[in-house]
Length: 145
Image (cartoon, rainbow, N blue to C red):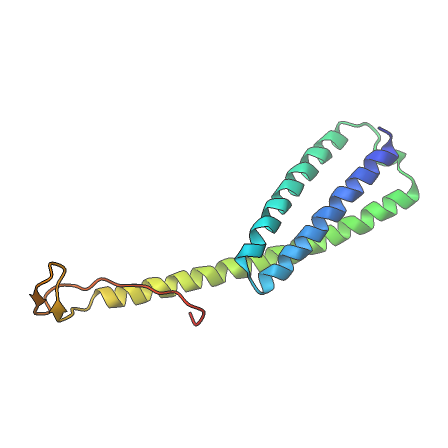
């Protein structure tokens, strides 16, 4: 495979990776988990393929020196796009992670509050309880959370 062909493959991999990162970033702005799963899997596949290809290229002596000026310019431009997309993606992932943690913490707090109270009525054995049993904390998650 010539240096030009290798560079074209590298550019295609980078282009695909940038597109997937940008798609994931958009989905993270308004999370729809059904749509996010396949995009994350595709991103992981592309990242693995990209890393392997970079390792192959590292074994190719003088690969970058053999590229034309146009190919170097294209590679530099696409690398910058990749860097920007990766940074934006990282920010969105971090925000989503923090939001998820805040929701989980809120649920945990409410469950602790509910578990600490006693309830009069029928107990777990079916008989009447005088309020000495701790109640369980049913949790319902909805869009208002």
